[in-house]
Image (cartoon, rainbow, N blue to C red; front, side, top):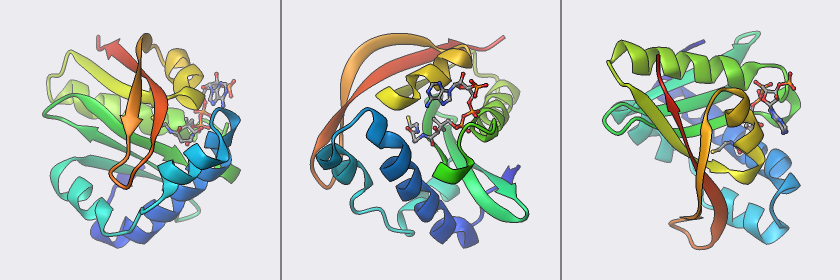
Length: 153
Ligand SMILES: CC(C)(COP(=O)(O)OP(=O)(O)OC[C@H]1O[C@@H](n2cnc3c(N)ncnc32)[C@H](O)[C@@H]1OP(=O)(O)O)[C@@H](O)C(=O)NCCC(=O)NCCS
C-alpha cells in the first residue's frame, strides 16, 4: 500500500473502468454501467492526487486497486479493485488505510455514496446504510446509490 503519484494516473483509470464494467454489472444495467464508466481519462485523477488522499494497492509492483479520501469532508470518494483481484481482501486493506489516515487527521466519522454492488462490502467494514440516492455523472446518466457512514473509534 502506498500513496498515489501522477505516474499512476493511467493505471488508476484502467482499474476504475475494469472494476465498474466487471463488478458493477451485478446490480446495474449495461446502459448504467456505460454511463458510470464513460469519459474516464487519466487526467481526471491528477486533481484527486493533488488535493486528496489517494492510496494504491499493488500486487507484484503492479497497481490493482485504489481508494480516495477527501479529508475536508470525510468522504471516501473512490474505492476500486481490478475485477480479477476482487474478493482477495484488497478493497478491505485500501479502506483500512484510508480510515487510518482519517483517524490520524482527527476525523470522527467518514461517509460515502456507495454503489449498490458495494453496499455489502461497506456493511462488512462497519458502515451503516442510510438513504437511497442518485449519483449523477458529469457526462450524463445516473445510477441508484446508497448513502453510508461509519463512526471512527
Ligand atoms: C467494492 C470493492 C472495492 C470491494 O473490493 P474487494 O477487494 O473485492 O473486497 P474484499 O475482498 O476486501 O471484501 C471484504 C468483504 O466484503 C464483502 N464483499 C465484498 N464484495 C462483495 C460482493 N460483491 N458481494 C457481497 N459481499 C461482498 C464480503 O463480506 C467480503 O468478505 P469475504 O470475501 O470474506 O466474504 C470491489 O468489489 C469493487 O471495486 N467494486 C466495483 C467498484 C465499486 O462499486 N466501488 C465502490 C464505489 S462506491
